[in-house]
Length: 130
Image (cartoon, rainbow, N blue to C red):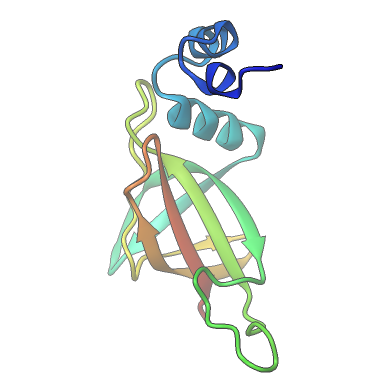
C-alpha cells in the first residue's frame, strides 16, 4: 500500500527533485513564471507623481475578492488583478499602494486593495476608475 505521509514529506525523492528545480523560494519562482508568461508594463500614478514603468501580470475579472454574495448573486463589477515582483534578485519590487491608478488597454484603473503578505509576489486588486 502506498505511504501517503512519505509521498507528502520533504524526504520524498520527488520532493527533493522538485526543490532542486524550483529552489528555496517556490512562490517567487511561480510568480516569475506567471508574470513572464503574460507581461505588461504599467506606469502607476500616485497623486501627481508618475512612477517608473513596472512589469506585472494583469488579469481582468468580474469577481471581487471577499465580496459578500447576496440573494441575487455576486455584484457585477469589472475588476482587475495585478501580480508584481517581490524580493526578486533582478527585478524591482512592485511599488503599489491603495489609491494609486494606472491605464491599461485604454482604461483607467484605481488600486483598491494590496496584499503584500505573499512570499515572492505582490497582489493588487483594482477597479475601473472613470
